[in-house]
Amino acid sequence: MFILTRYLLRQFVQIFAICFLSLTGLYIVIDAFGHLDHFSSHAKEHGSLIAIVAEYYAYRSLDFFDRTSGILAMIAAMFTVTWLQRHHEMTAMLAAGISKFRILRPLIVSVGVVSLCAAANREWVIPQVRDQLTRDSKDLGGVSARSLEARFDSQTDILIGGEKVVVAEQRILRPTFILEGDLAKYGRRLVAESAVYAPAEGTRPSGYFLRNVSTPKHIAEKASLYLEEKPIIVTPRDASWLKEDELFVASELSFTMLANGSTWRNYSSTTELIAELSHPSTDLGPDVQVAVHSRAVQPLLDGTLLMLGLPLMFSRRNRNVFLSIGICLVVATLFFLATIACRSLGDLGMVRPALAAWAPLLVFIPVAAAMSQTLRT
Image (cartoon, rainbow, N blue to C red; front, side, top):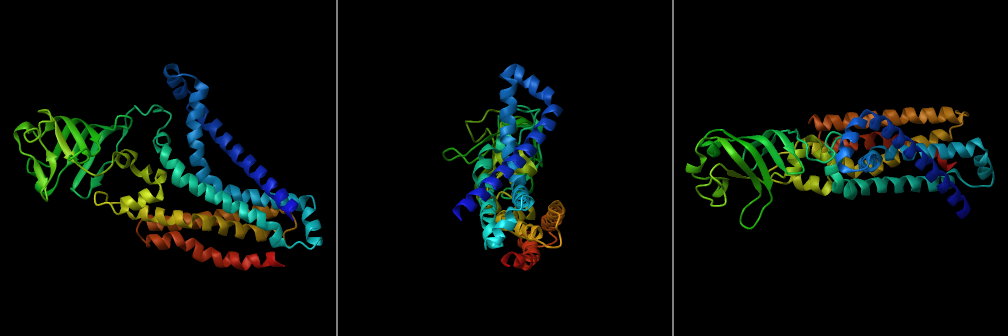
C-alpha cells in the first residue's frame, strides 16, 4: 500500500507542478511582452533586465498561486485518475481488491495539503510583500505617483483624499481633507502641497503632516482644534515642531490602507482584516466581512469541489475519460460562478456576509456527499 501511495503522490505532484508552471509561464510571457518597454527603461537605471523581470514576476507568482491553487489541485487529481484509467492501472487495482476510496485517499490528502499551503501563503507570505504586489510595471521602484482613492476616517469624521500618492515616501500629493462638525471651524477643507504620514511617536499620535498649507489662510495664527479633548488638527501656534505653513492632522487610518485602496483587503491577512473591522477609524463595508468568512471556508470549498469532480471520473456512464474531465470542468465552472454570485450579493449588502460565504457549501456539500457514495462501492 505504501508503494501505491507514493506512486499516486508522485503523479499528482508532477501534474500539479506542470500545470502551475505552464499557466504561470504563459501569464509571464503574455504580460511581460506587453510591458517590456517599462522593464527596459527601469533596467537602464537599476541593473539587469532579467533580474528585474524575475523579481517582478516572482512576487506575482505568489498571488497567482493563491488564485489558482484550488482549481489546479482538482485538475491534477482529475488527470491522475485519468492516467490510471488510460493505462488500465485502475482496473488492476480494483481487481486486486483495493477500494476506490483507498485509491483516492492520497489524492484527497494532497488536495488538502495544497489548500493549506495556499492558506499559509495568503495569511503570512502575501501580506509581507503587498507593497511589491501593488506596484505595476510603470512603478517598479514604488517612487512614481499613483491615483489615490479617498477614504473616510470614521473616528474624526475627516475624509482624507488627494490627487496622487507616492508609496515609497508615504506621501500624498496635493492633499484635500474634508472636515465636518467642530473641526470645520476654520473651513471645511484643508488643502496643502503635500502630506506625509507619520506613525505615533511619544505623546504624538499617528497622523499626517500637511506642508505648504494653502487653505485655510494664515494657519499659523489659528488655534488647534480638539475632538473630545484630543488634539486632532494641530497648528504651529500650539506646536513648536511645526513650521508656519504646516499642519498636523491626527488619524489612526494607516497609510497602507489609504494607499492601496480597494486592493488592500486582497493582500492583507485575516487577522489584519479583523483588526481593521473593529478599528474605530475605519468604516469598512460588508465586502471585508465577506472576505473574512470566505477565507475561513476556502479549504472546505476546495475539498467540496474535489468531491464533486472525483465521482464523475468513476461514473460508468462516461467511458471516455476525456469526456469525464470535460464534465468536471463544467461542474467546476458552475461551482465558481455560484461562489462568485453569492459573494457579490454579500459585497452589495443584499445578504449577510456569513451567509454569502457559507451558502455555496450549504448547496454543494449535500450534492458532493450523495455523489461520493459511488466511491465506496
